[in-house]
Image (tube, rainbow, N blue to C red; front, side, top):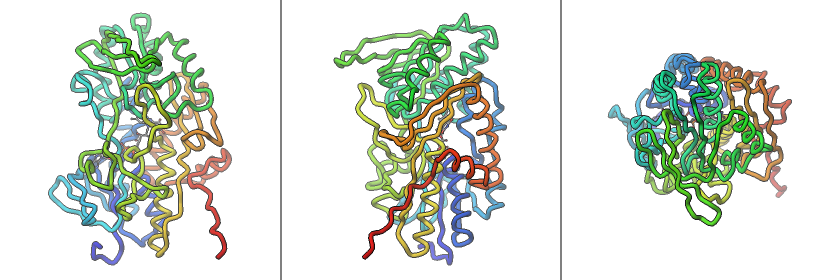
Length: 434
Ligand SMILES: Cc1cc2nc3c(=O)[nH]c(=O)nc-3n(C[C@H](O)[C@H](O)[C@H](O)COP(=O)(O)OP(=O)(O)OC[C@H]3O[C@@H](n4cnc5c(N)ncnc54)[C@H](O)[C@@H]3O)c2cc1C
């Protein structure tokens, strides 16, 4: 299609999913394909460490890696330019630098567009802190330092339609830990506001005992909470929300704050929105069991940008999170499926979508394993303790090393996953004999 001798695979998005996918494609395909990563930012950012940036526990530079030199070592081309529009019928990506990039295969990993505009007065530009991107977390840190000079109430949580709850809990507990260290906690009433039907639902209908673990963490830290909350608007220093009762009746609330961080709902990025057959009405990329788009068979997608239906009905809309290990399993499936296709076959590899998550609280944390992510599950386990904080630091160091070295699954990761019985690919079902 591109007219070159080797097929060109373009990976769009240089975040957690796209970077791992580019490396994994190189490792799985060797030199059989050109691999070209396109991202709107020159650097990779390790999003899970953003809460630490927001309280000053990490410098932003410590969780970022310039992509061009590390990708070049693996013969992966890199273009730092945003996608302007995708034209999947012509296998072409228009970039904001004015160029047009043809591809044979496209792997979309563009993460979320943050839907702050869906609620009046919401977003970092309106002084509601965000930890969704590293630049946002940097701004949140400045706001947090100003807050510490003149403390007052804090509101943390997520708004309706959000699909990422772990970081909201993490951030509430991390703020509590940091404020206690600064001997300011006694001056800060804290409230956790969430659309989840119960604490610890996490968009996953809970994992193991996350309900009682997270409730007791919040109680131990004197953080009040409101569930089934639908945020109606933010005004300077106030959040207004309705708490929905089972009857559907709204109970209106208004809470004052001097510092607030609420996770927004996500949607697909603009260059993909409205493309018939490619995306759902919110702009999330439709994929089949092989991570492939059903309408455009040379397009694959992974990570936060893909469409996954909610786990079940809830009074207030709650989305399903797409977590790191789950995203890596999608990357593995895509790399293996593209190898099948280049060999003249059909894709047959399915990601496990297992969720393995560490929620750090600064002085402890909660870990959970959901296999598969959507219930009912074969493994449904959660645990807590100081080890989670240490494990999260280890995870950050390990992932940063992975991005810098381009080795997607070092031997010790393979061994650890084997010991824990966690797989990235589903077992192949044997074809019936003819
Ligand atoms: C604050 C926070 C903490 C989290 N913590 C954890 C955790 O501890 N553990 C866990 O498992 N998961 C965690 N997650 C969930 C998930 O793992 C991350 O969101 C992860 O970064 C998602 O990877 P992704 O590749 O889908 O998206 P991203 O990492 O967001 O990458 C998307 C990439 O696409 C680029 N892009 C966007 N638009 C364009 C465009 N138009 N053109 C070109 N490039 C574009 C972006 O710049 C970015 O580089 C967390 C999420 C958040 C928000």
